[in-house]
Image (cartoon, rainbow, N blue to C red; front, side, top):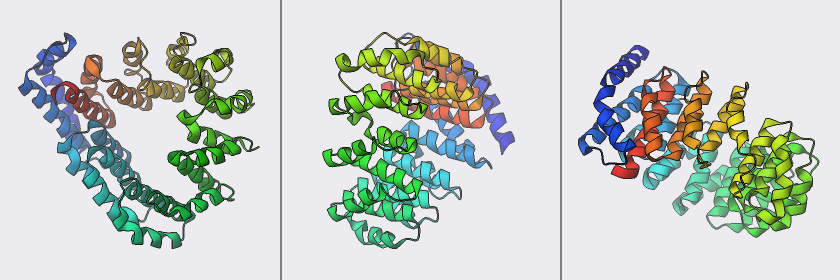
Length: 386
């Protein structure tokens, strides 16, 4: 199968000149011939379908996630197939992808996976039937309250609350004090997803915890819902010796009024920890400050490939004026994980620049990157051509 994929990639390379008029039209802001657009779209679909035939589980997972990112109705059948994969991560990615592509297909798959053997897949399925408002599954969800795994029981309580059974909210709050760390962090995440005033108050109370991981997860759950009431706690936490706490506090500060936090954020552009510097740069950008922007380009040259990958990923949601040039830099990174993050971020960026950058990535030596390039090209082409 790997040889078939390599042969297909080589054929795409030879066909590259066939798409030159399309690339030029996009670059010049014109309208490419519809037939050529559809030809490339179909080539990308074939890449995704062939990549999913890989014997490597992580490659199949990537192909399914990439198909979801394409938002292409023609690939719904492929993603549904992914919900039947023997590898649980693939099933989870497929379920999450379907939610973006087709609510009906997502609900049908989620109901089927309510009895999945993997607790994470089952938990995602429980969340999804609740988010999609499927009250027909109430009796099935209630049975999960007796599941042997606490994670599944908690997911069932969350689902029941979301479907209107308010008494189960207490289960989420009680789990905040549970001894099991994973269960506590999942409860924190659920309260963040609920996001009402009562839930945010519970999360704010956790900022007083002496456990850095609890504080970090609470800050993550609060996220963009942070308000001025949290200013003093956030300033205090920004001075924490724990870098994860500092970084999350700075990210939350990026959602407060600029006049209250700009002065507090700027010194962290020179923090010893690169993740903290990136957090400060992101918040300052959100607040329309010109400070700290060099952090993005500096971190893309970090010797730590994890930092290069993280920085590339956040660029997908950070419309810097030079974003396309920055992403172009890491699309040639020697590390697969970094190129993967860069391809996905380029797709999120969208537009003519994204098309120009993604097209050559169909010839990347790694199958999973070709899949992400294909999925994101389909989405980018859909922006103008439907």
